[in-house]
Length: 490
Image 1 (cartoon, one colour):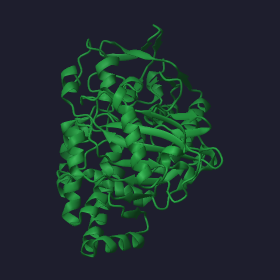
Image 2: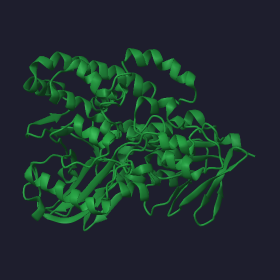
Image 3: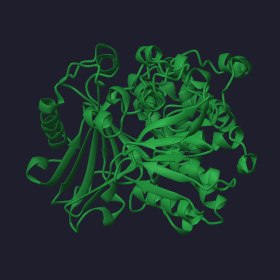
Image 4: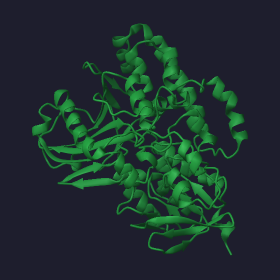
């Protein structure tokens, strides 16, 4: 039994199916994918959440477990460049896996930092080898697991923040920003996310940045097909009210309708705080008590605007990051002061730059994501949502999408309220728990529940964390901690 059909849940179902289980995935929404769902509106197709694939071999593994090849079902198109970073004054940096092109960009910005930049790349490679390739799919079920990696953590300077480690190698503010922003992709603040997340730039360089033709939802649909091909099921509109626990062992689930579904194994892809705060319930003693969940640090919220235009903006690439005038100060406002400020940074996704199928002919599809405070902030999103949309539109019109306001033909946006109410994410956080050192590896909710037998967790809230590589790796960990189906044979 798998609760939730996000990428972690779908991958878990396939891996369990390959090990002899007959799996049912229960999804409370009327579409699969969770945060990776799709919005169809006025002839446009918008991915609701993830927009890139950076470790395609993790998807390839899932198809091969079912005796198939992913490339026969979903095309992953390499992005070149990966994305463009546009600084507030208009200068742009095209980030790619072309080392010589990146050296040219560094020489243009700060020639004196070239040697340091190259040393950083070597450091990131070492961190990725240890943090992702070796530890990304290893369970951390005991404090001893943390002690074993402590020497490597010290050697790799994992006690530093991402920005702190980057700053050891380069001095120019632009380069420090360009090399340190990546924790924001998984809900972290670069100024306190541990330096282990410097693995992300190397992950991009090693395996590339890809876009699934037809949208990320094509991967969701493909995984659903694999589950059904194994003899499993995906039930939509199945709202799990609680996990049934008897004598410390998960026995199945109860739906909001009252229906009880027994299961030998329960895997929760729900938000980890929801799993322990709601689905398990107060009657079950767990390490993740209501008090502990209340003390936890949660990631920032997200404002996401989906819109289509009647014209095409051919000069705009597939992925663009538009930075505001402040970096550290803005993140302090978002993560610590919990203030919605007038200035902001944006990630702009233009899938129609690569894929004509997502927009009507002659039109463009866009997705603009703006990091904002989570719901700990005193923000009335019923009012501020439209105000933020107008501010984002004005910013884009004044920069890379001239005349935008008069070209919009379809529009929809979500705020942190959507993440709380529709995705059941605590505090409306876009990525669950914030990735800080004291909420990483053993300090996160474990992949095998610490207190409830036969309950397992996958997804952004457990180890190794958010992002497609993270949630897919969390499902891979199940191969090491869930017994084979024959263990439950009568």
